[in-house]
Length: 224
Image (cartoon, rainbow, N blue to C red; front, side, top):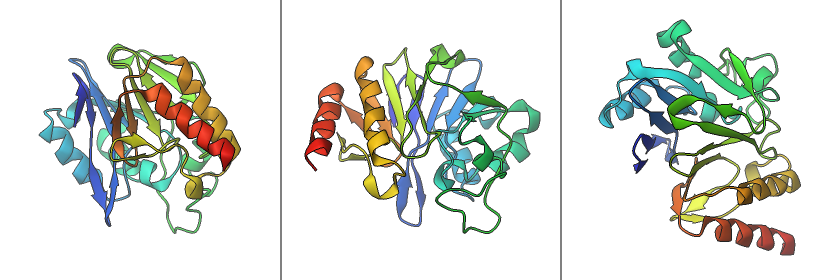
């Protein structure tokens, strides 16, 4: 699904679960945010080609956090792309992604996916790709969770900091969040941004009155 020119929400299916990596591109390169489950490399390749972006253009992978449905196909991407790809993640999730520590939620899995993180992200950082990407550290779901804001299209990629149902933001997904209070505090950072569209990894696209939707979720969490 196209959000705006050069911003596409990808849709992948795994055992009945629908997930939504995000693809950015311009004339020079493509940026993939999150990589799906293990074994979805070919699916990623197919959906990129379907939206008209050659896999050869992929130069950057940004991981919002360490969960297996976000880092699962990283090893295959690195194997194919080698030194032509640069991988970003927050420093707090880096050791889990690189395999130095067991994944917090999937530590029981034998031979979990892992791959080198070339550079670490910090709150407020501006990445120069595809018109500019602002990094927002949004801990709670994991300590190293980040969200990404595309200034040109006023689009927020929320990762797993929120989820969406039928286009409506539902706030923090409590069953999969490590620190619920911290996750709720992280949502307040979004209120400082001019957001027209939100991409949730689980649920896809939400548009319209984004700040109001976020406030409603925050207020609801205070009364729970």
